[in-house]
Structures are given as C-alpha cells and as structure tokens.
Length: 116
Length: 114
Image (cartoon, rainbow over all chains, first blue to last red; front, side, top):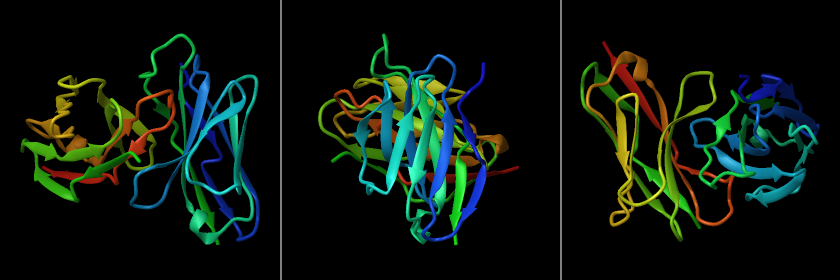
C-alpha cells in the first residue's frame, strides 16, 4: 500500500523563478493538504484540496497556488520565488468522504526547496 | 486563532529515562489533539491522537491525555530508547469542517544517548 509520495525530493531555484511540486495521496484518500516547514519550525498550513477545489487556505500570498486532479493527485505552484520560500514542503492526504472529520493526516517525506 | 505551544528544546536524555514534553493549546470549540514524530530526512508520522476531553492516546509506549481544564496534551514515555531520538510535534485540528488544517507547535528535538 503506497503512502503519500512527493516529487522531486530536492529542488534548487533562483529568486524570481516559478516552481511546481507534485504529490500523490495515499491509496484510498481523497483530500490533499500542503504545508511549509521552515528550518527548525513546525509545519504551516498552506491550503487544502478536496473534489478538485481549494477548500481552506492559510496565511500565504497568492503567489502560492495549487491544483487537484481527478485522480486526487495535487500540485503546488509558487511564483516569483523569494529567498524566504526556502523550506521543506510537505503534502498530506486524508479521507473525507464517509468518515469522521478526525481522519488522521498521512504525510509524505517532503520536497526540499532551496531558493538562491 | 488556534495556537499550540511546546516546551523549549532540545531535550537530551539517557536511555531508559522518563520523558515528558509539555504541550498547551488555544482553540475555539472542541479540537482534536495529535502528536507527530519526524525522523531525520523524513516526513511526519502520526504518533497518537485524542479527540475529546479525558481521552488518552497511546502508541509505542508513548501516552498523552487530553486535559480540557488545563488545555494541555503532554507527551510521556516511561523509558526512552535511542531509537526515539527525533523531533516531536504537538498539533491540533480545530472544530468545524477543517479536515486538513492542523496547527502545529514549533517542535521539540529529543536526543537519547546510550
């Protein structure tokens, strides 16, 4: 049973560029959330996708956008990269349909983004 | 808004010592509470959870009790092992339909020496 998979594992970009990160949820899950984890900090919620729509968003600028596909996989896009966007980006999946809202999140190993 | 505060780290213990990592929270309604663990180079793994007051979550010798009166969810383990060395995060999921949004504490680094 494959867990949450993210690609790529590492990425180096230059300030001002754009980046796309990808996530495949755990088998059977229908909801994907994205988190940013700066070095030495706890993860910060970016947004959540369910039924191909953004359902909830954290305090992140519009430079951060996403998409969910019919197969439940998801992309995170960041435009006009800043040095401060350097972080570990974590994808988490869960099951909403037919379950309680306490369904736990399953996290991927993340994509380490470095902006130079 | 929701917030989680964890005890300052890092925490360094000898093998078989008793572990406590303090966690307090602020939230509206009736949040669910979680402890996640992150090993080097990996994502977060759910360690345990509690969904209502006085619930005790437990897993792999770790325990935490949801204390609504003190808004706390302290993590404990009676005898730690070297393999428990990791970063531990306390988190909450607020009330309502926020299925995906977890609010995390800043994390506590645990190092266990033989």
